[in-house]
Image (cartoon, rainbow, N blue to C red; front, side, top):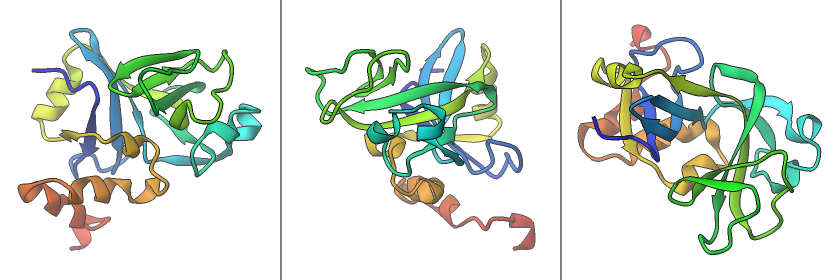
Length: 183
């Protein structure tokens, strides 16, 4: 299978519980050793400034911490979208296109360096072959990502918005009721 780095994984109804239910995952890395990503549509109630003082001003609304996935929930991972590939902020490391990881130990990026920034508690990780199996089983749809998906001002609607913009029958997933068993 080709890499899905820089693409979105959109959970199907095959995932009906847990942190991945109706999730949209941005894949930061994917190779023969496995995959790593962050759930971009699960904001938490934690105020970012309380967790990482000084970083809230650089983060996009809503200015909260996001649940990045079930792995290492006690650690934080910042993902930023650069506005210009020529002027990258100190501590930004490219993952795919204009998306990269921002070093939380370094200086807080200043105005104009980033189009957007999100901070995630934990991440989503898959071992060798695990993600490929889940995709083959129909748990995930792999769709193109837009830079704006990572910094959507309305993350609660992102799952249906991403599905709605797809071609063909894939867009019909966006109308799936919250509980398909009640349909």
